[in-house]
Amino acid sequence: MPETDDPLPPLRDIIRDHDLRASKVLGQNFILDLNLTRRIARTAKQAGATPLHKVIEIGPGPGGLTRGLLMEGAEHVTVIEADERFRPALEVIATAYPDRLSVVMGDALKINPSEILEGNYKIVANLPYNIATPLLIKWLSQSPIGWDSLTLMFQKEVAQRICAKPSEDNYGRLAVLSNWLAETRIEFDVPADVFVPPPRVTSAIVSLIPREHPLAEADLSTLEKVTAAAFGQRRKMLRASLKQITNEAETILIACNIDPTRRAETLTIEDFCTLARALKEYI
Image (cartoon, rainbow, N blue to C red; front, side, top):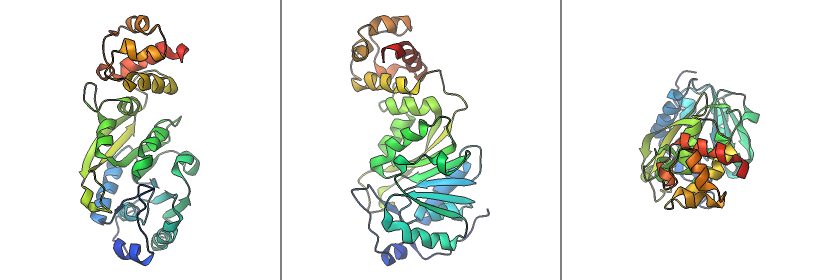
């Protein structure tokens, strides 16, 4: 679809007319600047192997990002929204963009995107902060992965944890799991003052592109447990932190050619996969 001008009134008017307020309990923050939401949409357009053909958006709220996606030419956007208050505002957008917007009311944590759309769809979202990480893990855990790309907004600290490399301060479980299955990149920062209400932190847009094959062979469930043990006591040597899995941790580390005195943040993703294969029978 070609880019279009937006036929709708300003978002502030939509919010006022429908008496919408962001819920602190649900971690909601609205973006009213359509220039910014269009920039996010363009970032999604460039991510992955497919154009903005089929898009799933999580937590659209009053529809700022939804409008950005449609204005940038998304052929069809399916939004998943748990808060019934936003249905009327989203239906206004659906009317303005005939046959290009579907509204699914429900909890994104309980919905498998691949049950809504077949493969080669993009997921784009200004994620509610309180469910951002669980949603990411859920999408990474799909087998097979159905999405072509993820373009997601996180707190900047979480974005840095997703994209961190070994030996960096933010390197941990989230970086291992994310980069094992996808190529990750921080695209740009989003300052707090573009939100209503403004959060107390800077946010960032992250792109994730699924790898054709994981970086190394491992079982996801085992890898999650190994990284949880290793990083749960990250200042301890691995021979100590992995004892919660087996008393033979030191012997297994040596067999994997990993120095038992190393700490978790120094291991590569491939190292963790080697450990996961060796420790699978103990988990």
